[in-house]
Image (cartoon, rainbow, N blue to C red):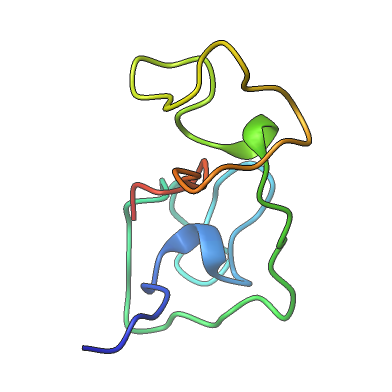
Length: 82
């Protein structure tokens, strides 16, 4: 099975800073997908505790050690709800 990014609005170049779709003219969330998806040219590749969905949460694997700039094998991106 191939691993790939979904057609999530959070990865689409048509998403504005206010979470509106420039192409369809509607407000969207990260869970939305569509057939007009256009991948952003650059994705942020900075995995660390500060942008992990588990940071300071009940599923954090290392709650006593977790801190910005640290990384562990349980990292999950903040926009992981696609």
